[in-house]
Image (tube, rainbow, N blue to C red):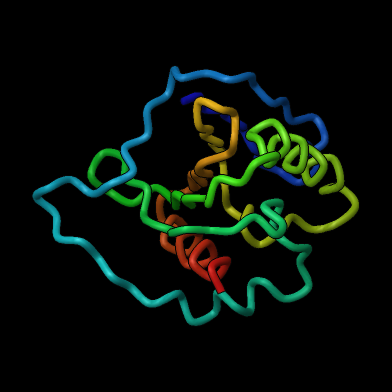
Length: 156
């Protein structure tokens, strides 16, 4: 399994200058809550649908989503992990290219709602290269639940 890590720009003006790092396993993401914490079930934020209005579609496109769960770091929610249904021909490199297109276009059009407030994107792949999951990490820990709520809307 490899993990591709992307650093999203802090300001829209520098989005075009964002660099994409190559495959790396240097960063480990703990995608589940610690055992001492009870699982949390929370309805999407009431205004999560409003945040989608007027924004382009998520870079995941028509990729089928198996599940969405909280991504934890240091015992608190830091974003969302989107588990994908592996499909032949949909590689981590293809998702990387889609993400780069979105970042290149961001000075001219708004970011998709799935990337608003996101600092980093991690794309994991199967040994065969198919994309298996995408983790969205919040810039601000206070926005992590909103990112999770918007990610859950992608399953609809």
